[in-house]
Length: 371
Image (tube, rainbow, N blue to C red):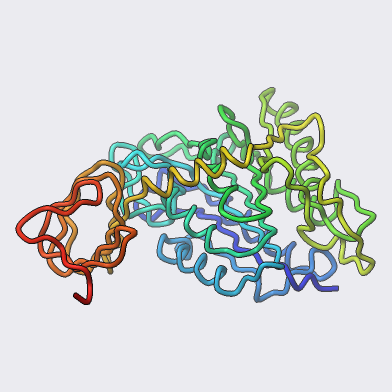
């Protein structure tokens, strides 16, 4: 049987063209194994064209952003969206958290602007997805066997910051986020063909260690399997602690992630059911999540120069060339002639002016586009 509402975007970065010290090839294998499970009609039942996989050179910044745009365009409110990222979580040279991409470049152990996916961009892409059922799985803090050991010391992996997680939850209805480990922990790779987290994930989706009387794999049931399987494996193998963490808004219940072993008899979920007790599940107050979303949106300053992907964000000054797109924030920079400017109050044409906090001063005040 098929699960026609299933839509998936799976990213396993694997290799890094500009920063080989970050290479973790197993992450590409993770994404491919997860795709195979989702597409299997005797298992999860996702239609083949609705499962997109990006890895290695295919997981460049531009390709990932384009894939998100494509996903948003083809996804409706009643679809179920599964997003999976396996790579490195880093901080950029602008202080922003970002997910690494194949073309990420490092300077002083930080991701250079215009490389990687900044948190503001990630939040914006999730806001564009209209589905009311979205599961985000992030495995971005690697350690253990097969971890990078050659070349200059890579920057330490960083988990999704709690404020960013809260903002992501507020991007739409029915968002659930599962990270491979909690704050201050690392995600152990292990010595198998897949990372420990993804092996447990694939096994759970294939019905190994999970059960269902409804014919579906529930998001909460899948998480419960992940939590106990990974926690036990890491304790036994490393004598350490790795606890996958589920974060959800208070009051949001589970939904069907996929078919259970290709089931044909399907039931309903209790939409008010809480996460399993005794796990590392966190419920976030909706008002706090909305406040974090507003904060990230208000402080976001992006200037994407067509062709180069350069970004100016935070309080850093940037010189932006013709053809750039500027989204006003609390920054100071210089915008050159030909730049399109958007401050939330309309589009403007710039004539080599300075920018401070969304106000424009300089030789000529910016004129509103079309005037």
